[in-house]
Each structure stands twice: as structure tokens, then as C-alpha cells.
Image 1 (cartoon, rainbow, N blue to C red):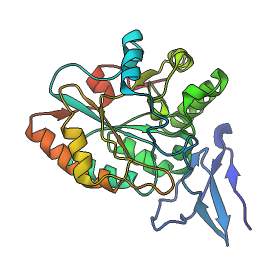
Image 2 (cartoon, rainbow, N blue to C red):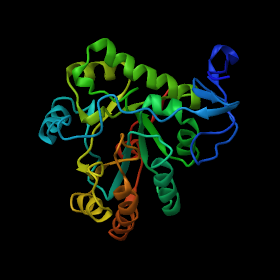
Image 3 (tube, rainbow, N blue to C red):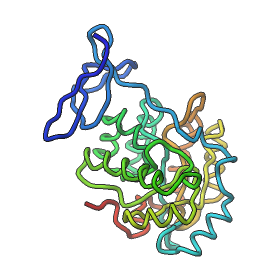
Length: 282
């Protein structure tokens, strides 16, 4: 029978499955609020959802000067970098997925580096085991909206819904809500700032952009990061992409970035460690 199966333990809906429709084999676990599909008697993971605002693009991104202006106007709410010490934070947007996120996690584990993943809510819902691997590996997770629209183009009630749904999805899985937000494309306005503040979310932008979403080689990704990183840098990378995209440059360039920065005496911190702010709230 095609369709869904679900139960309601403690009032929280969940979906169960036996195996996924990808080549990956997932554990037989039940995750709250997760959707799976039945076909020919077996249960399959639903495909990773696409990004509502489309893949990363220069058209959606505000100029870095505009982000700097917001950080100057709201220094307690909008953060671009940490203190001037030889510490940096690797941050990865748009996951989790089942293709690129596991590869990024594997590289970070190999080098013993902890990072911060800004996650899309409906991708957490679809790939809870990959999300939980982030947590089990000691990484930090933040809010990257529910479906990755450009928040600055939405009415206030929809901005709040995007952020609240993601917070609730994270809380269902790990018992706490993210305290940090990265708006998709880094696009913000007064409404985004006000609503984030009301939800106890700091807005975390960046001052080093890998541009890894733009089909770059590993050498190009590494060059973009290494040429611009300094003490206190927050480095923007990605652990998932949209339809037709590739992050092979991220996977190929990440070891070079880690090795070179370590050689230069830098240590890697999560965002909350770098900025000395909470990672989660209850």
C-alpha cells in the first residue's frame, strides 16, 4: 500500500521506515515529525526538499557592505566576526542532505575540528539521522529557516513561522532550540532583526565567503578562504546545495583549508565558542 504511516507518542506525530531509497543504509529509528513514503511494502525516505528561494546566488545576496551596515546599527543582534585572536569558525549552510553533509562531517571528524551547521528545517525533518550525526560528532547547529526563502522579502508573520518551525523541529530532536540564526542568503531587514530578537536568536553572518556554491574547484574554494581569513573570522561554506548544484569543491578544498590554518597557528571554534554566546535555549 502506498502512503504514510505514523503514530503519536506523547502527542508528537512521527513517521517510521525500514530503508531509504538512496544507496545509504539508515538505522531503524523513529524520529518525531519525520516523513517517509511507502512503496511496494517498504518504507522510503522522502527526497531532500529543494530550497524555496532557489540555490545560492549573487542575485539574492545583499552586498557585504550592506551586511556590515546592519552589524554597525545592531552590534548586539547582528554579528560578522569574533575577537581579534587566532581563532576561526567554520560554518556550513543549507544541510542536512545525504550526499554532501556526510562527506563534510567525515572530513571534520578526520581532523578533529568542530564546526557550526546552519540547518534548513524541512531538511532536518527529512534527514534526521544526518542531523543527529552532527550533534553526536560534537558540532553546533543553528537555524537557517524552514524552507530557505529570502526572509527579507516575506511578511513578518511568515518570517516568524519560518524561524519558529525550525526551532521546534530542532527541539523535538535534541530537546533545545537554537540560539543563533543565519538568514538564507544573508538577507535581512528590520522585520527579520526584530523577530529574531523576539525569539532570542542572534543573527550570525560572516566575513569570509568561500563562494563554494558556485561550482568552484577545491583549489579555488581554498584560495577564497585562505586569502581572506584572519583572527576571529567566521567562514561561510555549505554542506548541501540545490538541484543541479555540486559541492565537490567544498569536499576537495576543506582539508587544505584546515591544514593550512592549523599550520598558521589558528584553532577552530564553534560560533558560540568564538563569540562567547549561547548555542541553545530551552
